[in-house]
Image (cartoon, rainbow, N blue to C red; front, side, top):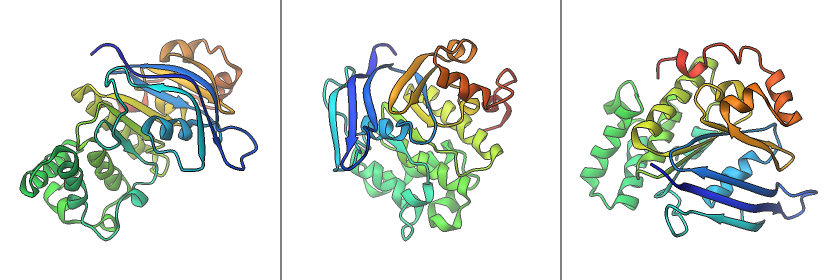
Length: 262
């Protein structure tokens, strides 16, 4: 896969009543098939960037600059062209609907599948995301699943329509360390298998170091630096990147994603 998936030029986002813009003048080109980690401290603007890419900014947001999709040649459709995995899977799933029906509904809406085919598609996705008992999971409500299992369901829903871009916004922050590594390993495997572009938002540079092709560092709503992961980690140009790296030991050890079975 070649070419650009997304191109941002001077992208700025401001929210009504906020003291400063959430994003200021972001220039960023994301190549198709890239696994990009967007890293920054709380309030750096990384989640706002993820929402802007997905077209999910709140109504109070004012946007300047340009966001283009060269590979599509049109504005993307959320859910169809872009899959989004939220930080809190429990909040993103409907608590009163069985999770199998929720994933199947995505396939029905965006792929036009029949009810029977959509259910079969959801079941196959549950196998792909390695839920331990896909048949039981199809009948489960969100509260009956563990946090890691709910996040796997959320990932299944995000890829149900076979999107070109998968955005994961802090998808492991509510999970323990071992489950975090397994979820990252799963995402890495899925995007490789399907040739998707991945934007993975995290505050944890050590977690991202194990799978990202490229790393973008945000600081106060601005892009501090962006480049190949190895270069950013070994020779950071921005002081903010150096501070993030210094806060994590063991970046020269085998990455988390390689140490945990998906």
